[in-house]
Length: 527
Image 1 (tube, rainbow, N blue to C red):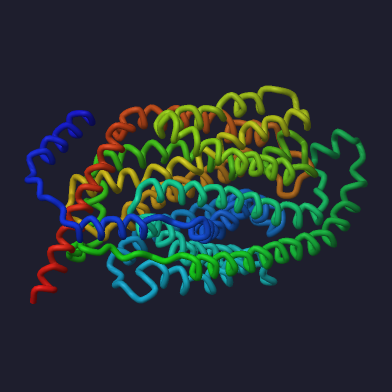
Image 2: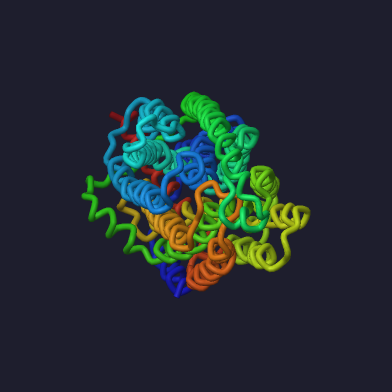
């Protein structure tokens, strides 16, 4: 089907009248090519802008669940409500912000940059308040729910315009792919920074666990329970302060990265094109959901991303209680992120050499054997570190590929709809919407499952039902989701042949626009 569509496009193009390009048109085309090239400095500044989303995302993804359960000491049921509602609200705001961004008028700073600039200070404030334990016991659930939702909304106002900015930093697909590789490297490095800051600062002030009935029965000495509770009360205050310090450091980095992005990246307005009329929200939804390749790409990555999000959300608890590495979980998480960061350049080379669809199959399935291995063998710290290194390679692919392939879908849409312009943000925002909503559902259900299994807050050990639930959440369920996602992705029609064909067609469209500009310039000189 894809090949037929491509042949039809080329047939139509071949029938178009060929108009000789004037010297002015060639000159304008060369000038446009030079403007489309991005310097290394511009790519780095653009990439640094993606770090805040990943730094805060990794800190929240790895640590928020265990923070709500063991530090804020919320009931697992209420923690599941906070995680689900926060992510679901975040998902709803993505297409809303994408729609508003698409209707934003061009300013001297661009269309995307004002959103990024104005949302940063409020996002930083709400993020800090998430990691503060309120003094009022009765208002804890409301506190975390409100500030978690506010932060997600404000961060959406940052991230959706930033994601769409990919289409406005250059008209060259090669330059955009290169900038995306820079961005993915920095973003995975951002997850390392977020995991390191949160893990190492908090890891140095872990509150002692409270022995459960299982520990007391095993030791045969219930007299220890009272002393542990007294010690943990003092250390719990230190743990709370450690979380606040870590969040303060992350907030400072957030502001710094936003400033670098704003000062170092120039947003380029599309010239020579007639802007489309503003569309409604539902028209925008029909627009993107009516494009088949986009739907297949989003659905495929929806399930694979959901698998890694489920793994991310429960891995800290799995390491602590199923593997018994309570004092090493933050280091294991850090190893995963470091491995992922070092793998990004290799995956960029791989997808350039063998194609993006091949990279999807190899990169995503790479983690499956290690997901199975980690729950199949007896707990061993060395093996846990080895599995973490291997799993990080697949995490890198899961980070890079969706954002590298979304511009291809947008280009395909432009080829099939040459008269529709200015709606790129909607494509990116709806992708984020589906992944975040699914993430909220998964985190809510997984935390609720722990509640049903009998999770004990701050317990030194957990019932067998909780351990079994954690094993299910980090291995069989993610593996099944990955298999389903790859099955859907098999029908994704944009292969390397079609992608290169779209690139040529878009270049021809730009050349025609350049020729039109030269004709206008000649007419103006005659007048």
